[in-house]
View (cartoon, rainbow, N blue to C red):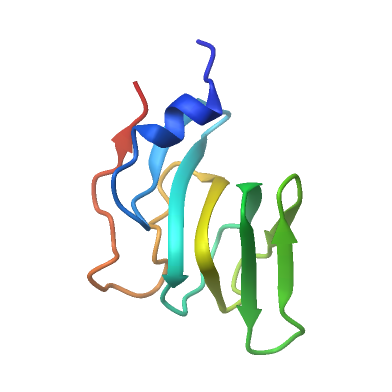
Length: 120
């Protein structure tokens, strides 16, 4: 299956609502449109890769310097590291993480997605 990222992002109606666009080796490739601040959280057992397709994303950390990414850049947040993704204006991101990873990690909130939608 070929995924056109520009078309795929148009299928996502809400911010902070990751959609699965592909799977490989037990990992989900997720796409999301984001804006504003996400919950502070961590993933006990999983690294998380953030790739910026369009816009600008800042990943805040409590124990290290924040990371700001622009289109074409990615950053891997190691397992167990507390972080908060923030986008001042709309940003389109791709995430790589184990298929069973909850988007809000160790926190449950109104942004927690229990059943992820898929890109068609």
